[in-house]
Image 1 (spheres, rainbow, N blue to C red):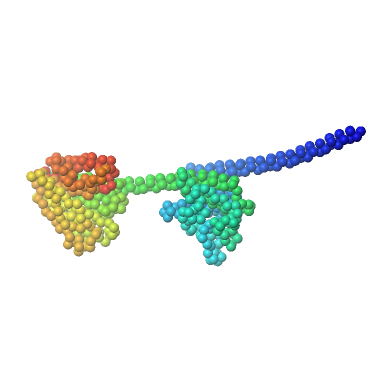
Image 2 (image 1 turned 45 degrees about the horizontal axis):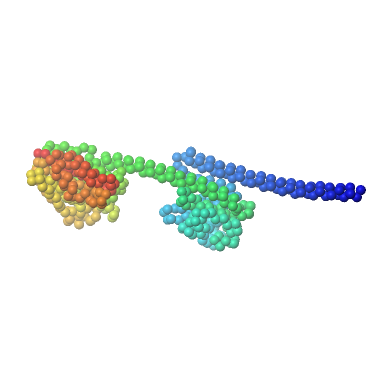
Length: 486
């Protein structure tokens, strides 16, 4: 009997112990299930946020011809705040202009991360707007503060207890108090584009490693979007510029002579090759009257659109002045008188203007600081450089210009050739940094001269292209040729 009672007691104790272990196991099992469910819910939430963000940003690209970067950054901050439960957030982008970071987007009442808050803030009508403006106005250079640190090292910064970290500024105003802060770099192809920062969870908890991982994932996705948004803007800008340059090129081409004037016993030819879409070189043939032909070639200091605009002004003024006189020097004096006041100090125009009497074959030459024309004489097969004094247009007052300029007269014979050119022809360089030079130009003109003005141009172009080779043209090239046939 005693043995039976003892056995029963042992069995009861065993059952109680088994029940206790089972209860503890159930307790831990329930706790584990709850944790797993919580982690599952977090992962599902993170997945929802990531996919929502990607879909949202994709809409920006898919349904707009122009990417609104500020709007896209606002969306990024919306998801960053929602994911990390942050009360405020900001994106600081790197600007090449001043090589510093600037707050490009702000969500909530984001506190300044460097500097001091002015006492005048307490008197501001809208404190939130004043803080917002302050954060946007701050210039953060590389290596400065938490933003500079996150950018320089390219790694996230998680500060759970900001009050104990000397890097975090603290302010007396409660709404600017920083309890916890998280910063992640925004990088694309090993290049830091900016920094995303979130401050203070709304549940008063510190940011966690999970928050960091998710915020970094969002920053990585946003960096790709920002890069391609900038690339698309660049491409759009390039298309606009290309279109403007094409129009400018069409206008400039229209300003050049549409046809070469025809005079019995005289052959004319010219070419103009701008270094860019539009350039600053110019040539013109002006039929002054039945027996006088004006010929001009000019080079504006500067290339591109600015040079083209100045060239078009020079053309208009020259044509208006050419009608008033048969004297090239007087015409250039009139051009300088009109243009001097309007040409900026860093610009000038060199111009050669010649007037040919088509009956007597007398050529009168005046130079406003331009390259001297060359005269190939058929009778003794020699070259003469036609010289005359003169200053470039726009660099001297009228009295000085008038005193400096003069004219040279030559009488042309059948077979003679006169060429005028811009310095882009003679200063063209090959791969060895050698200039083509006047001597090579004249050596090319000499054998071509008996075959006509067009033969001269074709010979120059062919020899020049062979000399330069694959070296990119850096200056406009223009050449004008006159040949007396009889």
